[in-house]
Length: 218
Image (cartoon, rainbow, N blue to C red; front, side, top):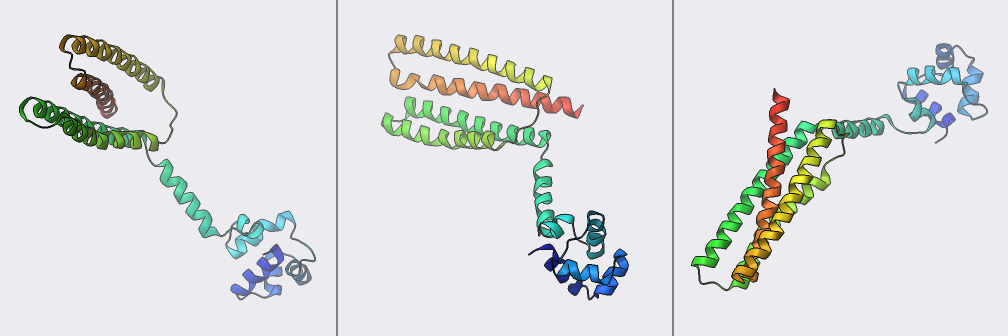
């Protein structure tokens, strides 16, 4: 729909005559007629008055975009920007804490099943991996869906500290794994040390998150 057709449609929908529109815009009736028949287009100084008269946006008049659609876009953008860092931190804390709890329960059940129950180790390992897959998938999904915010110097520093601590935990887990594995020759079980190491990394993240929330509340 071109501008002339749009003006004609808007004028009819408001039951206005060409004379009435011309009077309100301080132009002649012939000018309005030429607009509607596309013999000419409104001057720039008449665009805004036209939009005010018909209660529409300039985009709706010039591009044909409906005001409702623009409002929906604005609402969607508003909904996206209303998610604050504090909301994300609280959600991250909830995800990590529940996942850590699940990991601990899974490890405890794994050790108990190995020591006390006469169950095939392959079955136990399969069940264990299925259980820890749930919190792992939840953590991955959560961190992928987090919108990007500009980090403060404090947040960058904390992220660097977390990375360094996690690197130390990773190296320590590897050393302990090989020492325990060579000592006990229980290679089929000692891999759980890496799971415990990953669990400790998540606990470190949780501690920093809780520390950050306490600081923001103060």
